[in-house]
Amino acid sequence: MARTRYRFSKDQRPHFMTNTIVAWLPVFAYPDYVNIVLDSWRFLQREREIVILSWVVLENHLHWIATGPDLSKRVGEFKSFTAKQIIRKMEANGAKTLLQELEYYKLRHKVDQTHQVWQEGSHPKVIETDDVMWQKIEYCHNNPLRRGYVDQPEHWRYSSAQNYLGQPGLIEVCTDWR
Image (cartoon, rainbow, N blue to C red; front, side, top):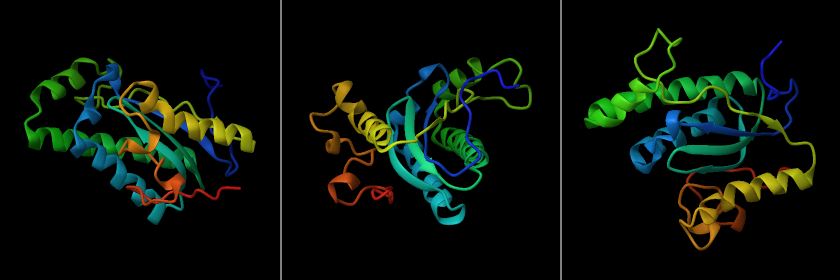
């Protein structure tokens, strides 16, 4: 039996997920690392039949709503791939302090790796109604607004708010999810 109340459903219903950097480190304050996430999402869309319905990336965590086959497996692949790529990019960029912090905050039982990028889990929540879907989409888009980073959700570059206004965003998003 799982130790958490958060589980992926077996069917292809949309899930709201949160992925957080260990110790809430501000990894995504650097566009290079956000681009790794965006490229990975594009791959999931193109090669793994994952449909992204909404998303936002802030400096230390991200939220996304997605659906598709084997979503649990795909999210695990996403986290594993992005972690490896982020660490490689940090090494190439000479980001010694961030690398030291990712090593320091690594959980002790993770003996097969030197660094840990993501906290464990994705806290998936199944979305079963249109009302909950709109609530989660608005939560994603208003997150930067609540933090005082922007005056309008669509002004935050790293979210799907622009897609929902009919404008092109950084990645394709399915806005017609009903």
